[in-house]
Length: 263
Image (cartoon, rainbow, N blue to C red; front, side, top):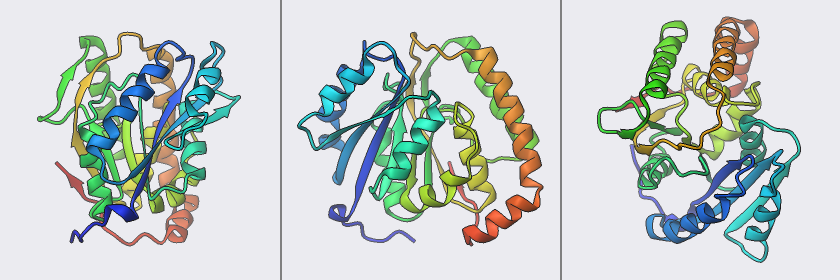
């Protein structure tokens, strides 16, 4: 049951993982600093995580954070979106964390919906879904088909219930971060899928949030290479979920709730 929420007790770190995004980073941060006060009643901070950029992104990130309390900058030498999210989320002290792509493909109106689900304690994780009926998506046919096939594939192999594993918009409670993130092995794009599969299989409550989503035409994701790594990750996870190691991790986790997907 939801309880009365005191916004003064809540805080959120909005994490933006970046790799060679010098051309757009300043604009994105400016947009977030303008919009977040309008849509979030709680304390917030934009956290830029640069992981291995070589185009001056780190210099821009540092300058954007300099002298500001609502922007922070972190730097990692090694690449990997999962690595960047792990680092930022684990060292955060905010009551909630989230991440979104630097191009802001997901409209920010989904953010207060996701965070409200966590703040009410009705859910542990909120994920943007481009595959829900109420979502409004502008995307090329090829990427849309690949995404749908991938999500169907993980449903068939791993028997998942969440609808979209790879949308670049997710939010977690502090407890979910502390218990789930250390279990994730992937450091790259499969990080998202592994997070949700582990969460669902350990009884965390996941809320699917419909989104308005516009594809970034400048996306540099290598589709075939990423797809192959994802396929290998899915079968690795299937073996892990059947292992004694996972059983021990679940017991240590101590989570005793039933999985719930809200649509």
